[in-house]
Every structure is written in structure tokens, then in C-alpha cells.
Image (cartoon, rainbow, N blue to C red; front, side, top):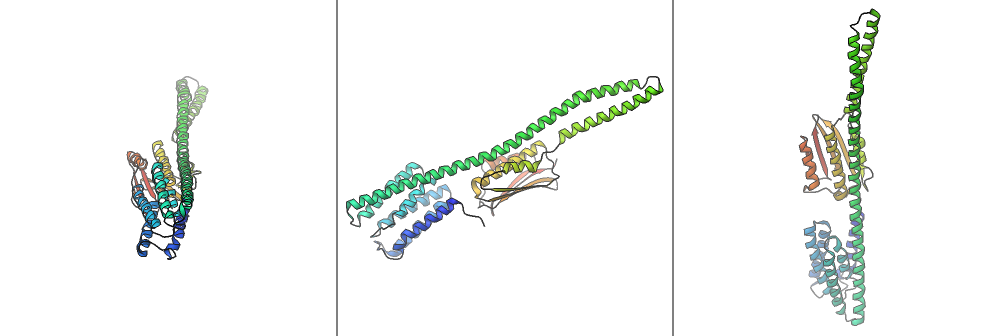
Length: 365
């Protein structure tokens, strides 16, 4: 079972507080100026709208947030004794930084303050008590807004830092592979151009000497010729090995997912998989995009990545234990991933029904 994130616990506590401060009216201890069932219906609307605003997309969330605020104003203005009910509006103001701009939140706080002042004035407490109560709730709204805004900014920066960390790990892996490939190519060229050339000359010289007179000389020359030819074959074998030595794919993918904040990344790679440089880059970039999206959207604790050969294809399968996505919409990152694999003759598929799953494949070369 997935554990709730701190912001999810915070939302639950806010809902409990909203229900708690409304309890006197719900239980009938405070008199309402509108029919009691209608007041309860408005409370239910405000409560549900608050939940929708917390969970829905930004567009629907803003409409639900506006409805919750309006319902909160009506609820506060239709009770004879507000008690702690103004805390409803404080909670709604605190939720503003995640949905609307700072200017809009300032307008909401000002409107909330007017409503709290009007509701308090109706209880005949005098202008002094009304001013004190209204000012008190105004200060609470402002303090809560800045606290939530600071926390939201910290979470956003932490998320950006996590994504930058994953990208840096992927770039490090690819740079290391590029450097290794360049070094292997340089060594192979040096071996071929220098040692290979000299041994070839030696073989030609010995071939010419073999035709000279003298049995002993001929025997030694033939033996030297065999040694030179064997050495030349060994050099060529070494050059081929330097060119074709495969990347440690498991180590590379584990490096990309290493130290991902709050995410346990498990990587399994079949031992006999050999990829060329383009395929390796595609797989590493896929791993980067998968880890980044998991950190950004999934709210997951575990990510499982498995790479193995399936017939004529090399398959990468990744699955997390997060919230998933009922309708998968491809952004720039996933579109770029799809295009990268398509260019190599492969394909990518996504599924967000239970967690988020990615299956990417490239043909064996």
C-alpha cells in the first residue's frame, strides 16, 4: 500500500479541521438563518468542491476552488454565531498558492476579511470586538498564505533539483560511454597504423628473404614469418575487441536512477544483451525520462526496470507503484522518447491504469 505524501496528509488534516469547526452547526447547536437542510447542502457542496480543487486538474480545480470559496462565504453569513467557522475561509485562502496567482489570492483574502467582519458584526459584539476578530483572522490568512507559498516553492525547487540530478546522471553515463568509445577508437587506430603497418612490412621482408639460398636461413626465416603472422593476427583481434566491447548496460541504468530522492529504483538487465552506441543512448534516455516522470507525477515509492531480449527485440519494461494516469497525454519528453525509438526501428507504449508502465523496444542488430 502506497504511503501518503506529506502534502496529502496536510490536505486530510485541513479537511478534518474544516469539518471540526463546522460541527456545532452540523449538530444543531448554532442557529442558521436559512433552512437547516439547505445549510447542510451548502456545507456538503463546499466540502466536495474543496476535495475536487485538491485533486483535479488546474482548470477544473480553479472552478471548484471558486465554488468552495463562495459556498464558504454563504455558510459563514447564514449562522447566528460564527464561532470558529471563519477558519473555513482561512483554510481556503491557504490553498490559494497551488491554484491561483498571488494577486488573486490577495483579492480572496480581502473578500474573506470583509465577510468575516460582516459575520462578526451581526453578533452585536461591538465595533471593537469586530475589529479585533477581523484583524486576527486577516493576519492568520496572510501568515498561512506565505507559509504555504514558501512550502510550495520549496517543493517545486526540490522537484526541479531531483530532475536535474537524474539528467546529470544520464549525461554522465552517456559522456562516459562517448569517451570510452572515442578512446577505444583511438587505440585501435594507433595499433593498426603503427604496429600493424610495421608487422606487415616485416612479413613482406621475410617473404622476400625466404626465397634466398641456404637451408638454415630458410628454416629460421619461415619460423619468423609464422611468428610475425600470428602476432599480426593477435593485433587485429585486439583491435576488433576494442571496437566491439559492449557497454555495461546494467551499471549505466543503475547510475541514472541512483539516489533519486524518495524513489527506490530496481534495475534488472539480462546478461547477454549487446547494444550499439545509438541503442545504448536511446535506452539510457528512456531511463532518464521514466525516472524524471516518476519523480514529477507518480508519487511513487518504487520503480522497477527490466531489460531483456525478446525474440528479435530488446525490451525495456518499467513500472512504478504510483497513482497512474487514466488518460495518458504525451508531453514533449514522452513524444521525444517515442520518436527516438521509432528512428531506430522500435516503438514505445504507455499504460497508466495501475501505476504507470512504459514498454520500449528496439530491434536486435
